Amino acid sequence: MSDPRLTPANARVAHDTLRGVVQADRFTPGMLRRVITPVADILRAPNGPRDRQALFGEHILLLEEIDGFGFVQAERDGYVGYMDLANMGNAQRPTHWVSAAGSHLYPQADFKTKEDMTLSFGARVNITANHGRFSETQDGQFVPNTHLSPVGTTLPDPIKTAALFLGTPYLWGGNSRDGIDCSGLIQAALMAAKYDCPGDSDMQEKIGRNIPEGAPLNRGDLLFWKGHVAMVFDHVHLIHANAHHMAVVLEPIEAAIARIADQGDGGVTAQRRFLP
Image (cartoon, rainbow, N blue to C red; front, side, top):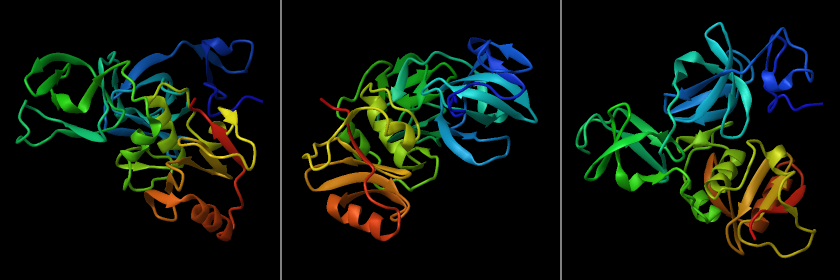
């Protein structure tokens, strides 16, 4: 059975590529839209619980409008759900992305002016001009150059990228520097290095290469528990967003394994390797 988190179809509408695969009242190619708020929740149902988030400037495919919400599929990883229509605007192909932990949009090329919006690591912008220390977006706002990288630029070390989020508050379903969960952290770190990575930990557990039990762990390896994932930071620590600390933290590997077992969540269910 297809995973509904990755299948752009509900009982009313489905993407054109699913003709003959699923039943729906109508099929559509959808309309490409752009997130125009700092973050936008991807919900399980209209007004339902948050499953994931999309960031400013990211593209989503709008398949249906219903009661002020859109049935959408995120371009980043194919995640499907519902999003408030107020978070969407006209699509723009981004030229740059925020490769710092965070940044701001300013109304002028002056850091002393009041910011218009906070941008998280991973946000996308369309740059049309350079003004010294600032770049101007298609919408006439300004971002510090030092916070931007051209689209296609990678951050090759996922561990260093994950460390940008140290201290970030834990947020179930979060994908931003304002709040992130365990799988959101792993996805941000791996996708910045151009590794394909789905949004939820149970999906992440199925990719990469298996590490046999008892084998030495390398920097960047992933450890999985039921409903949780962490990344090996060095030979002693792992880095993870977790509800125990309610933040992204470094924690000794053995201590984390013991603590998670003691709190009733069981032992490590898988060890996976993405990096060479």
